[in-house]
Image 1 (cartoon, helix red, strand yellow):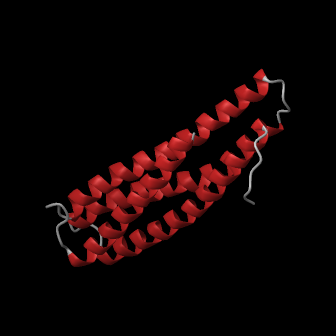
Image 2 (cartoon, rainbow, N blue to C red):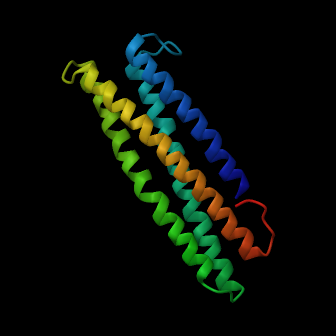
Length: 161
């Protein structure tokens, strides 16, 4: 569990840096790793979707583990219900952000072929980045809450609020 959670954090940091570089690149038109903006955004989209898929599978996997653990140890199903509530909190904004990013990555091609105004793309890009930061705060809270459920379930004392 810890390995995947730390990997989610590291990949989120890398994705945030790539999105920031891509946003700046949309204004200044400089190459990154010998890639123009369109090519760099393809790399950015791959890393972004890998990261967010990893986050989704983290919560799915820990939810299944919690369900099986409580069932095998004849524990209260309240732990599993709490893990479901965490998923209900994190999934809707995450999936909405994924939709926004899909639109953003499609707009890269529309801007490149002069079918969409650059200023509109950049404004939407900024909105996507702000929403991405918002979902990262939700994910951080959800990671903390999920860890709290697992530690309570296993009887390990925790020291965070």
